[in-house]
Each structure stands twice: as C-alpha cells, then as structure tokens.
Image 1 (tube, rainbow, N blue to C red):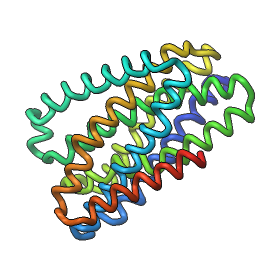
Image 2 (image 1 turned 90 degrees about the horizontal axis):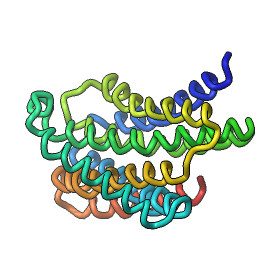
Image 3 (image 1 turned 120 degrees about the horizontal axis):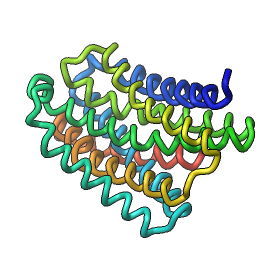
Length: 243
C-alpha cells in the first residue's frame, strides 16, 4: 500500500475509533434521568474546556505565538457565531430541537480540532514510524472524551443511538485530510497550524461556554451540574497532563 495512503488510513481509524468509543460510552446512559444527563453534559463541557485551556491554546502559543493564536481564536468564534445565528432557522433544527444544534456546533469544533491532529500524525509518520505511532495512540486516547462530548447533547434529541455514534465518528474525517496533507508535504507551516489550532480553540470555547454548559444547567438546576463541570475540568487537566 502507498505510504501516504497508509498514514491517512491510520490517522482516520485512530481518530474514528477514539470518538466512537466516547459516543458509545456516553449513549450507554441515554435512558437515565435528567440529573445523570445533566452531569454527563457538564462533565463533557468541563473536559472540553480543559482541553482548550490547558492543551490546545498553550500548544498554539508555543508553536506560533500569542498573536497568531488570538487571530485563530477570533476567526473561530466569529465563524461559529454566524452558524449559531442561522442554524436554528433550518428545517432540521426545527425537527430535532436545540440539542442537535449544540451537537452540530460541537462536532464542528471537534472536526476543526481533528484537522491539525491529522497534520501532526502525517508529519510524525514521515519523521519516523515510532513517532507517528506514538502520536496516533495519544491522539486516539485524547479523542475518547471529545467523542462523548459530541454525543451527550445528541442523546437529548430524537436521534437513534446508531446515528449518534455515526455522526460522532464522522468528526474524524478531517483527520484523514490532515494526515494526508501532513504525509504528502512532510513539514507544514507553523503559522498555518497555529491558526488552525486557534480556530479550533475559539469554536470549542464558544460552544462549551455558550451551549454545552448552559444546556446542562437547563436539564437540572441543582448543584450537580456545577460540581460536574468542576469534575470535568479536573479530569481534562489530568488527561492533558498525562497525554
């Protein structure tokens, strides 16, 4: 098999399996009450917040500096704001409700995040098989909680479990594009990657703060959602520290 195609396949499978596992774990609690569902969404939101704050943004700053990172964040926030304005007026949103909008926005943020991850896998394999395998494993584990975050709001809609897992797995497709480009070019402009990471961070911050956490509060008004957010942030911090 062509080396570039092999690297692309590895990147796609790793990311797809990671996000799918997250979706499978999250949908296992679908028939639970509002307290449990609120806690799941809050924990997912906390994890995503940690990933952006302690991993994604610092990585972007270290790679290309504060200015380029902020440019990417602003572009990401602006882009997802436009989607947030127009999505509620589509027929699909009217049919399945606001939870689908949250999931689609979150899926977009994760997809934006997965593209530079694919670049990293592709470039890593071209630098050496051991480095590529190491990066692929780390990114795959990283994608499990992110897959759960995308699936959690979908569980509040009228979409089947199979479709939820499929939609979540589809967020891995940008990894394939990124892995192919990374493998084909070998070395990617740090400026480009920094802006991509900033863009992903901006979209994810908007969605977590404006959609995921507020929805967890709507499901249950008690303290469980607040505690769950804090637990999610701690889990995310541990994950980013280990991986």
